[in-house]
Length: 293
Ligand code: R5P
Image 1 (tube, helix red, strand yellow):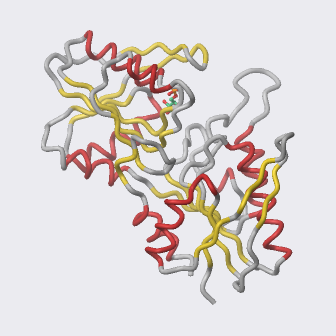
Image 2 (cartoon, rainbow, N blue to C red; image 1 turned 120 degrees about the horizontal axis):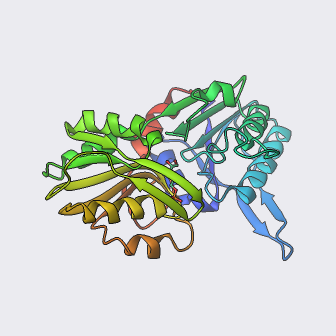
């Protein structure tokens, strides 16, 4: 029996496009929010023993509880296998206690996922000190896929010869791969974060004068990391600064922050729906999902 795709209101277009590319039946999990913000989740009952939930887990708290409600409901309806396709996986950055008594969210979320899901597919999660998803989500068939090839091909299609810059040490893993695809030079800056909205960037020791720079990062959240980096690049004489990012989180005033730095182009993959989306992940995700059945 073929699996069915279920998606949530926040990921409707992408979920539908994945289902259509795989020629799989597609249903929407309906959510209703009561005045006190509790969620009511309705899952259409279908005849399949394998369901694939597709949604990105940005702004995760509501989405997580609704996803877990949906999992419990389909299990009760007799579903045997539940897969999660979450292009953006939440809570991956808190992989240790940065200050005494902080919860290690990554581990906690990972344990919950391993309880609910047989398979988890995600795109370039923010793995830093913990490098394997199997350590985070034990006893689950986990698969990380990378959007770096798509980012690299996109840059190649620009017919420019940019230098690629990662704003911090963590971005090296992505910048390096993107640079290989589009045959570009690359370097990485050093970042110190003092608060959510206060970051200090130190550019690598090279000449940026007259150069076209494309910053590569996995996530833009408040936008302060790439904004601060762009300001410094322009001060160092860069001719043009663009940004390409996999996960366009863009918290509420991120665009205003980014506008302060005269970044020429901001491109993102559609892992999270946003008006900067330029690169579709449908084929990449569909190929991986196909291996599940
Ligand atoms: C963290 O190291 C990530 O790779 C991003 O650089 C970070 O999440 C961006 O955050 P923000 O846009 O809030 O500066």
